[in-house]
Length: 225
Image 1: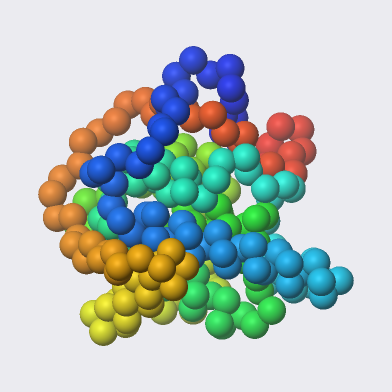
Image 2 (image 1 turned 90 degrees about the horizontal axis):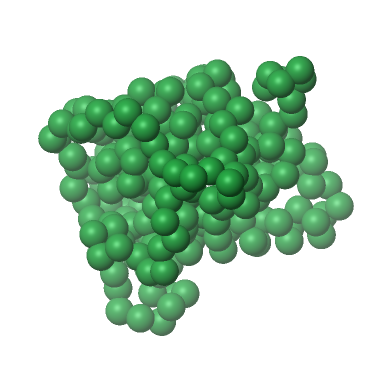
C-alpha cells in the first residue's frame, strides 16, 4: 500500500485556488460526482441495505473513504499523468456505463476514488498516443500496482470490454456535464475542453506526495488482500 501522510516532507504544497491552466472539466466533473456520491450515500443509508446496493462494486471498496476530496484527487491525477482533458470525460462515460450495466451498484465515498483512477487510466490508454503505465498511475492514485492491475481487470470485465466512445456520445456527455454545471451554479455555461494530447510526456522519477491518507484496503501481514 502506498502510504501518504502529513509527515511526508515531499508532500504537495497546499493550493488555495485552482490553477488557471487546470482544465475546466475537472471542476465540472468534481461538482457532478460530489452530488452523485452525496445522493447515493443518502439513498444507501435510507434503504437500510448499503452493502447490498453496492455489491457489484465491492472490488473498488476501501475500508473507509480516503481523506482526499474528489476535486483534489482529480487535480492530482491530471497534474502528474498529464493525460488529455478528454480522458476525464471518457472515464465518466465508463463509470456511467458500469452502473447502468449493473443496476443497484452505487458510486459512494468508499469506491469513487478507485473508480476514478481506474477509469481515467483506461481512458488514457485508449485516447492518448503516449501514457504512463499502471505502476505510475498506482503511485499517483494512492494504491499499489498489484491492486490497480486487479481493479483494471475487474473494470474491463464489468464493461464487457466495451470501451469505444463515439464522437457523438462523447459530445453528448460533454453537453450533459456543462448543463449540470449551469443548473447547479446558475451561471453561464462553462465549455469543456475536447482536445486530446498527442505530444510525448516527460519521465518523472519521483512524485511528491500530498497530504492524504492511503487507501484503506484490508491488510494481511502488510500485504493487500
